[in-house]
Image (cartoon, rainbow over all chains, first blue to last red; front, side, top):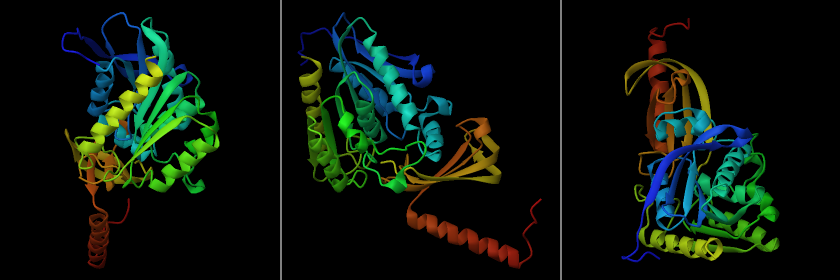
Length: 252
Length: 91
């Protein structure tokens, strides 16, 4: 934990790295200054886009001692304001799961290639990013911890499956390769409390290590201070849960 | 989140965006997260021209009730115009 006598510095900038099918995408990268070693975090943006909140969160991870990279999963949709680009992706029904997993895997490999990484990398995401974080933790090897914040459509009905999202992430649960932290609002409809229970049942059935916290009085996106769904008390507690969980699995 | 409920239609017309009028090519209709309206989900309509890039967009975010009223009003106006003989035949 930071003490007032300590030196603190940070580098934050846009970079590029290889993603799905070795295509180059851009990413926002923030890391503490110094030789490290630092644990790493891949920070997966939400459906509303690769936006300012995600830049802030990427720097927040760096402030807490993580080399954090947030890949632009909407890179191939073209460039403009985050809203305009995300609106285009929204109209297309999101991005393909294979593509997202490939881009996240590229961000993971980028972090692991750096000389100041301690070899342990986690993945964090909210909303569709929470779903992607869970999906990546199942389909990729190399993550040491995963944080799914209210990822919807982890549990999907057959009617919801599409060519771009052909498999419900919950069906990959047996392949989950690292401990999972899940934060959910009891008033959320996607994921609903029932869907959270279904995911938890799958984790238990496969003997996975996980921690789930369900927040009364909170709905979807309760960390977003710029939206009406923000819930101060639950958000503060949620961040504490995240730091404790990541310290346990990434900083040892 | 993210319902991913969306449809795209081809449209003809003009829209006024950040840099003035542009030719519309598509309308994207979704029921998903809005950017500005203070709800978890909204009926979003983006009038776009993808060939001009993501910035060529005229956006509205409506409550479901407002969207239904809009549909009814559009149908009523078109009906009145048709009855009055004002509708141009498609080119």
